[in-house]
Image (cartoon, rainbow, N blue to C red; front, side):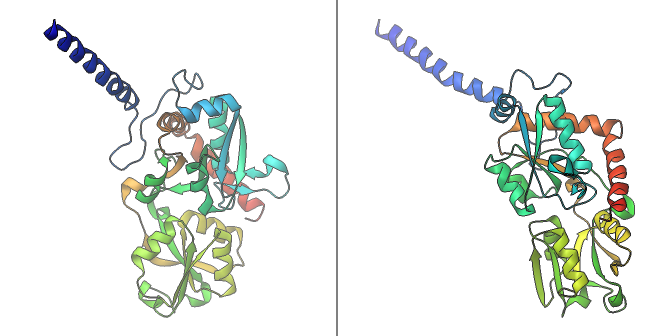
Length: 306
């Protein structure tokens, strides 16, 4: 009798142990890859699936998808001053946000904020996602969930560039010429990290709040060189032909290939939500929709002088 009770107790203990392990195994079907970003996806054609995580359940129950963005990075996200309310937020990333909300069957709410705040907004659950021309970095992947890449640059447009005033064309031709110069980048941006990793001697390194502040500081002469995304620099210089800025030939800051592409960010642990986002990304990449949005809003931004 004693042996039978011991055996039964052992079986009950085994069941007690295995049940939680089974539950964990079920959850772990959604995983990040070796670089700590989510690169798998699910079919989004049927909307939010029956099996959802907390983030998706909250979105479905509220009927609203809240997106954090810094709307000063044309053509991905910017403001059309001729429009009002939510309509004034436009750009390729805003279209992506609209598509995600559409596939979820919910309303979209764009929540504007400074760039350094977008990650905190999703980490703290204030917003469901951040879509703001976000590049991958290991530090960001440790703080939030990051989607697969959706906007890749190739050839000469790849990476970030050093931008200076045209008047300094002959004085600044290499990073060595920055030794007694003031440099700047947007606080919290990939360009800030790339500048820190590649330029070691300078008079002062300023971290500014917005990309508009970065260009303004350079134009006003309060800094001498800035690091910015090359596509954004091209768009800005073309839209502002009298700004007097140029990209320094031959100086390019390029992250490792696995870090290429813009990302959508979500709260850490919201893996099924990110698989849903990746499903939408698959959709807009497959038929070239995102690139079409990018090209259209590039022209749009030039047309309104951004």
